[in-house]
Image (cartoon, rainbow, N blue to C red):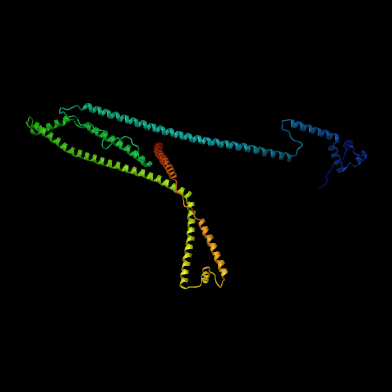
Length: 481
């Protein structure tokens, strides 16, 4: 790398740099400074003279910077910070950005939570609004159907009344003294209106099908009644048939024939006889049907009474079984443990008695065998005490005393372990127990009866609600359950 070229120093530059350094207290004369002010050293001296200041200038500069910092702290305007480096400024900006990010994140979370709550509330209100709208639509449809049914019934009633009045006005008493046959009644054998009765319990599908079938039967009955009424109104008058028959007889026998009236009377008499013969079997069949229905009704009533008696008996038996079960549970809980302990004690005592009896029998057998083979008294006592070998009289006496003491202790222990004979039960306690049991039984019976009535009422209400729900779903066009 070639050496850097420097400009030749001038007297003015030398003097100015010397003056600056001498004012700062440089220990050098002008001649020496001029002699060394050459080359790169001259540049270094010139740089020092330009940039190095004294204590007073440095103090003034520091004072100016301090005043500027205080003014900047008091001011709200953004100004460049000359005392901090770029790294400090970047770190400060980064920390400020982090704080801002944290604050904005928390504010965003709060806003999202509020928005979520508002959305959930809006969804709930929308669901309620949809339900209200569906309910309103259902009520409007039901109201329209009910109004239409009411109008139809009113119109049919008006038409029936008009037809009845027209029938009464159009057919007066005939010359023959016979009235027109009565108009067919709406209450016929095919369609009968019976008073409302409580329907038996049935399934929802059966209830819906029965309602549809009843409606279909009612419409069919009304249609049948209208057809019969129209046929009745279209039928000829009573006198018209007689007149036509008279004309036919006159054409057959000739006009002015003397037997025309007699033939007419005979034809009428024959027709009435045939009509009576046709009506008699119907009357007999109806009476037979009525008697059969009465017999069936009586039989059904008897069966219903028997079923009611069986139901009452089953209820009473169930309550009695519950009472016995509770009594058995009380007995098991309170009396079974003492009885078990007493039976165990008796079993132990009986076992000891059996052992004693067995030992006595064995000893009797042994004595019988000894009586068959007579031995000496000492040998018998030795065998009874189960002593072996040759023993003396003192040892035998000690063994016999020990056996007697042991038997005495055992007998006293058995006597002390026997239970005393139980005393008689007080009759007043039995009567009190029976009265308390009867009162509890009556109270339970009443409570169960009330609960059964409430259950029947609840089932009827549930069936009505289910029917209303099905009708509402049908009205809304929704699939039935």
